[in-house]
Length: 281
Picture 1 (cartoon, rainbow, N blue to C red):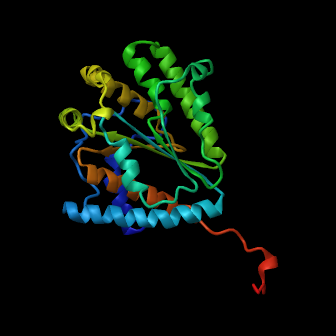
Picture 2 (picture 1 turned 30 degrees about the vertical axis):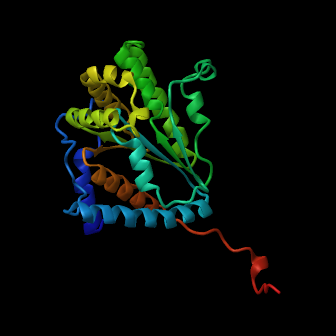
């Protein structure tokens, strides 16, 4: 491992739950949402780095799309206002719409409720060469029902096992899975919710239900700790991203997506032999 990779691994270590499968809850309280482990120092430098990474991701995504040996799932999970939309806009701002898709998951429809809870998720998996970005995900099914008391601890454990098996299926059939939990503080969430109320152009994002969920902050943190410990696997590991700083959040996610794509040894497909010596007249 190079010195650069060793340094990156050391920076990441506190933010990545164990993938040994022991399933112990992963403590979030010791992780500072205001931390900036990937920062270059000045905010302007970090913004410039995000822009450079977005350009690099454009080139890598073009190669990824041509290669077609893999599929990429980028999953963004986090509380209200944690920055899922903003991360998508910043990190994937330069990629071509060709081959890059996004789904923002909401409450299931009547048709979706008539099936198992992973049915609608499986239908949105990326195809060969495609990148799919999830704004929320199937992990809502081990968050909301748990906090609301709609499922028992035994059912929750069963769902963890379902999800791990489902993601293993995806990984073993060519899907590269990157899971990011955007970790913000209670105080930062309060400020962002207030900004949505105060800014007429952002009020459409605000729902009264956000305040009810905020009252259950501690319960949601506990549910997140449980799912992070139970579903961080060798084939689909979690990374917690400190997200009080929007710029740093974008920098960290973009860096890790870039690093993963570079590790795949992407290549263009072989030339068609019929093209040898072909001249266009």
